[in-house]
Length: 638
Image 1: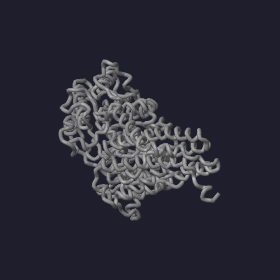
Image 2 (image 1 turned 180 degrees about the vertical axis):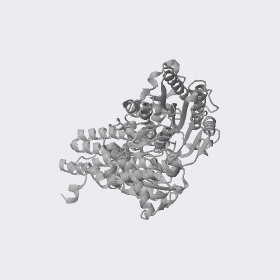
Image 3 (image 1 turned 135 degrees about the vertical axis):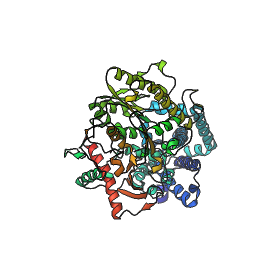
Image 4 (image 1 turned 90 degrees about the vertical axis):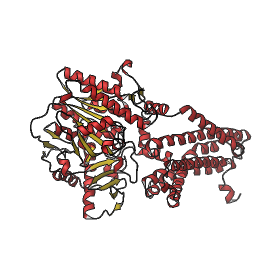
């Protein structure tokens, strides 16, 4: 027997070539489909498209190695006997049927995920596996699931029928000797390990834009990558500096802001005494966190016309902060920033971490001032670990479980309609005031979320027709809430704060496009605060300290945020992240930090990369590192 024949795989292994070919075909078609869906002319330029397709093909090949494992095992285990050949053909055919259905189903899921998040499967997909009720319910309510599954099944059967003869011929082919099968299957079983060791992030990271990197990705590979790295240690993966220098840099930040607070020298690196001027203002606080309400939807913030007349009126009559930026792209990041005043460290938000209790919160500071902290949510608060976090940090949690069926006019898988949520808010604040207490109600809305449905007859856009309708309905619900609240005796003694959790679209020309993180912040108390527009660049982490400053509260602070109205006038900056990349924007310059200790210094408006070795750039980089390193160290100490 020649050396060539000893190493040639038996003919039944041709089935694996068909499997790999189908996998590459489907994933290549998904990539081309996403490119077409984006409709960005730049993606069709050969110098852009060819690298995307080439790198994408590499990741598709790497992912296919895992799919071949079960086929390699049955090819190895079944002997070269007539009955075993037939059995192999049948088993391989059934496996291919299931595998092809899974490929096409995943392709459809990738399209839906891209439509929602403009990204391949990532940590969001991993997190959503935990909350199957909400995830599957959202899919059922948002998309025609039955027709989609029928289409996938029909395509599966159609493709297999077209190649049935060739696949059967390969499956029933010679199995070879056991040593031949051991060599062939052994080589195939080694491919996943080789794929894991050889193919990393480098090929995709070499592409010039975020959009190109996402298009070149592979959903299977990216999902596994996110699953394995759902929490990243800043100290291990990012550029760092000596801990003492990082703490010193953070103190310098408050000096730059001309803060009058005094550092205590305690074990917490940011602990300082904040002394207010004048007596505390004994007010209720209603903080409304609006789902996906980017500044681009509000005319009063330079956005769309006609969608938010009620919020626009509140902005004109209250304090309008026009350049506030969200810290992240998910609700948990917004809630984290608003309640903890902490930068968005890499990996999971604090809410979903195991050690998420014992923090200083906005609710805790207000409780010391005589307010009962409430977290009021229209859905089931186990989602995203909200109940565990807020209840574990001293809030009274009120959610969907507190509503009877007769109190609900409409609901989706995410929660009740915003108008029903606000009725619950009125009820809870009424109860506290009737008992002689003051209330701090942190409210989280849900209606501006796919499937974008709401009660009929409220606005002039039909329910379920798209985000514009959901935005306009959410605004209507806020207007209705404020009209009802104005009839309450506690209205004149209440500070109303409206701020988004994040925007509806965060991807752009850079990893952290600032324009896609800009959110509205409105503070409304007509009997207390005269109208004013504040154009200072600020972060979502500054909302809590600004509320406390408006209330003239003196307290010991461990917050990273600053009062936008005083400190924020001298030290304008924003912090933002997209899970892997964290950033800091100041003076029109954006510094991005990413794993493998990468750093980029960019013009915030254009995305043009600047030299990172100039004295000014080094200063900005150190400032960025300090924020995230100190925040990570504080979280690690819990």
